[in-house]
Length: 130
Ligand SMILES: [Zn+2]
Figure 1 (cartoon, rainbow, N blue to C red):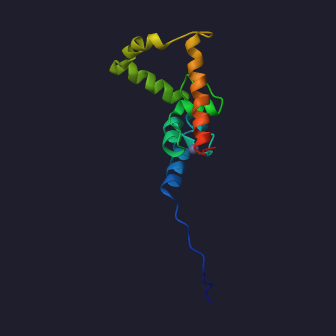
Figure 2 (figure 1 turned 90 degrees about the vertical axis):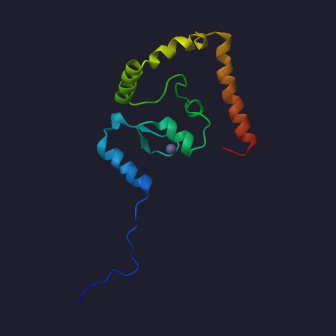
Figure 3 (figure 1 turned 120 degrees about the horizontal axis):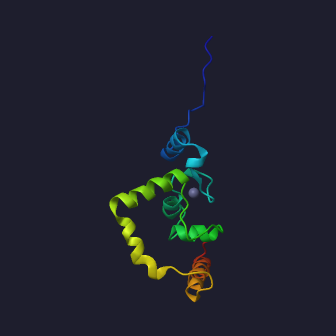
């Protein structure tokens, strides 16, 4: 007699599950960054949190989780690749244009960024977002 599997369907994996498996297979842990909201791994978590978790900006995600809000969250190898790109395509020259926005600790302009985070939290609370 042949045993039949009755009522057991093989679950198909979603696109995001397949994508996650591909990432984990092709990259080491040091080449991926974990999303602190959902635990999934990414090459660039900033774009993920804006698209999937409703943050207005990746900076808001970094502020919420107490990360350094001034620098992006990238694995070292990807940071090196991007640094090479900006040198090759000339966009590194744009840094000079942003010089007016740089400030040192204690500068009165610095508090505006922190207050914008509290404004963001207050805004979300009023809208019922945790
Ligand atoms: Zn996530």
